Amino acid sequence: MKKKWFIVQTYSGLENSIKEALEAKIKSFGLEHLFGRIVIPEEVKLNRAAPPAEKHLVFSGTKTKVKTNQDVEKGDVLAVEPEIKAKSDGKIKEIKNYRVIHIETIDRKYTKSYYVPESAKLESGIKMGARIKQGMPLAHQGDYICEIDGRIFYTGKLKRVVVERGTGEEDVYMIHPDALISDKVKRGAAVARGESLSRDREIRSRVQGRIELNEMAARTEIKVYKITKNRLYPGYIFVELIPSEETLSLVRSTPNVVNFVSVGGQPVELKPRESRALLKLAGLEDYKEAATGPVKVEVDFEIGEMVRIKSGPFEDFVGKISQLSPERQEVKVIVSIFGRETPVNLNLSEIESIV
Image (cartoon, rainbow, N blue to C red; front, top):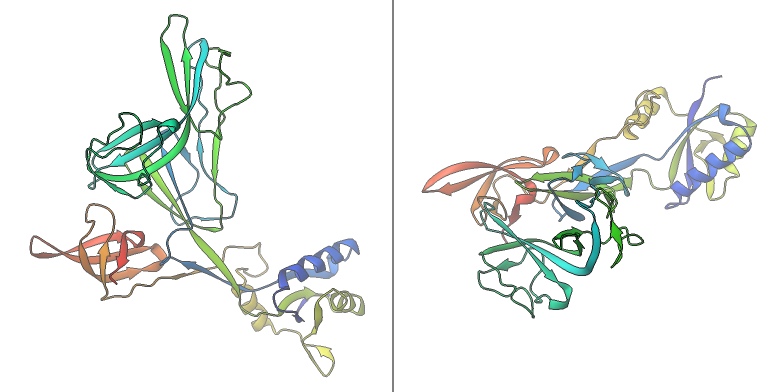
């Protein structure tokens, strides 16, 4: 007998837990052959107008595991920093906590990195995104002075490990604290050439979202824009089953299930046209394996709106939106350059509304 689709009324907000409970009951009673899919249709939204939920900077040598417009789940690996190995035999002379500060000029043509010991105590204004001028101090103590005008694009904690060779020369390694092999890398410990001082460090997504990559000369910026899911029919789930007293009773007796949507006491069976629409809404096609449904991209911009470019070579230019492609996360802005109107293709993350 062919399985048919039915609508089950539940308490709103408990749809997912009811689905899990129902699946567990079906398995425990060994009735998988009498049931098909259990579907909760959802609309997937990507709010591209909001700032990214998280942002990571990875540098040369790091292997990026994602690409632009790829959807990721919470916990997915975005990039992997390779392990660091000793370049020569020696003894660990020093392990200290440091801060790295990467600064770039506004045109992004030149960058400079500074390594400052934690004991020097960074100035309060030294943080990602902050503008900085040549001659400004980076720390309260020591001679740590900025040498360029620009913007701080990254700060982070590192362990500075100094290995002294038998010749008296020193090798210096800057290692992320999370990757340091702390039970091996200790002051006074001997290390051999090729021995690992750190592990591979996986950078994982903290949210479910969509990726945007900005490739630059010596680094890659990984942004994750959060994806949210809204139930299309709150308080209802859709169950595919072979109708019988046994299967209908099993569904009805599941905690927090109200009842089947019925007419005259009989559960209403979805028509073929309705079931096909349901599968499309759920991102399923003709009983195939689950596929990613369309993502609705929401933006706060509109054609004709005046915006300010906030990053890249046209930073601080003001222009008018002439084309808008939310799904591709792209926009075309008309700006005035040397008195001539010029179209500039940008990513949505590079513009902001003029308040």
